[in-house]
Length: 369
Image (cartoon, rainbow, N blue to C red; front, top):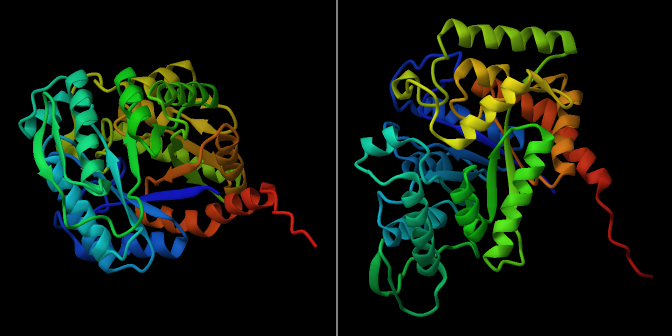
């Protein structure tokens, strides 16, 4: 089984669409939800930055306007005490009906953005804090007895929370591409999230995540998510014409209008986070990789966020996604440069092809007479 995740926001903004209208547009959120729910997505990511609306409140509003869609809410450890975060996510799990909430842990790849919220730890210190943070969160969710916890980052005593997750388990997704990310994510993640690199490099990262998980004593290894920006067309020629128009629009906007936050979060200079550095390194090796992975959009935007595209007809892109499934990917995060209309197209034209092929490949259980 393959899980599909989209992305929603309170404005429709992307590298080729400048932000417009109110910062919180309730109708836009409802349109995002409808496109993804009707399109058959399993979850949507609610992003996080130091300037954007609070993700848990966005998810609560979106959940109230949906029936089954799940919400992967991005969360930076360090700004909310872990016991409070545990209560917040557990409460949302109850109000959404259970089984629709997941936490996406991002320890922070930009010192500049961290400092806007008053965090002056360096990257390795942030990951060490995340390790402690997740230990407390998970104990608060699942410990049957009151517990104490104390280390250099957190000190709590007698924690026994009344509000626990309604679902048996709130999944923890974990993002990052550094050694520290592999070490901490390998220890805690249910799903480890990567950006869309070529197949060989992705396979290498999967191996490193699993190696870190084994080193942490885990026998059940993290599942793997990979993120792409599919660009579809009725023909290959139409898909590539659209792809080049998108790239040209990003270049004309001098790096684009922002990934999901708009230009207000654009940062000067080379990216500090390893994930963006890896995408730019892939772009330097060539624009086209494997079946149809195109890195020109990442190069044009400075790899600000997940920015590599899969270009082609729905059939071509579906086969490319299946190539990643073949190397162990279980979750596919897809978002478009035209966010809402692309989500509709993915649901109509792309997701059914991938699901049908996965189902065809899956052995059916043998029923004894």
